[in-house]
Image (cartoon, rainbow, N blue to C red; front, side, top):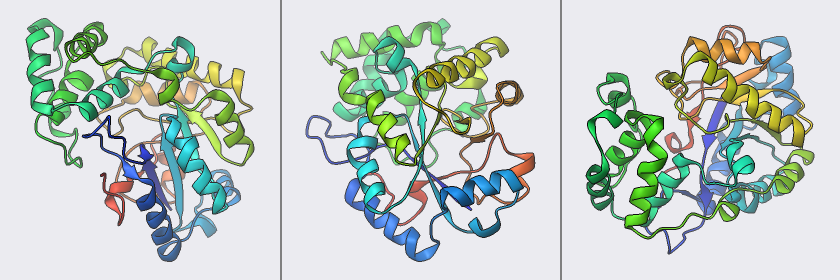
Length: 308
């Protein structure tokens, strides 16, 4: 089976001239390609594969996954999938619904979409102090991040500093400071799909899963903090949805982004399966030995999947 990961699927917004996204027309073209080349895993086939620990009739087919519960997932993705009688797995970070604030990771995306990367990086460095970046020398963060992204100059380093190198004690303040310099305002209600829309999507056959509370790099957190991110996210989801299966995907993805304590916390919280980011098919062995970090391709690895 091929699990495919998507984030932004939308149309061009002139207020975000540098924003990277998959145009909805190319999304439809990619679905056509997958249908012709591989076919799609039915939900029944997926659930049987989990139960039997074998890919079975789903072998070689595609399962679709979508991260971050953004408004475009209802406005565009859900409508396209419904038209085609397809389903997907949608992973929800819960903090935006609990605190009514855009997540730091998405605030970074919005700034990168609105402004020049060189100017953003220069502005950020004006606020940085050495004690704020304890993970700057972590080789796996420098070598394993943004390898598949074709970003504008300055953007990868801006994102790498804020998403990986900076202590979470300082990140929110730093983003606030940069945003103030550019007079940029974030709007939570416009960015995320409302809970009632997500419920509608679930009732139409899609699966809802956890993407933590605040979308941190889990390997940077303590054992207690990791468990809280997972447990509290499911507590919120359980209060809003009738979850048919407990599923999770690792924020950012890649083996540098989580560790053994993450996997143990998932097992402790009785999560049935989780997705990582790793460019290969799901095989039978994964359904037993790698069930909490199943491999998942980025959509940009296939025709029509490149970001605009």
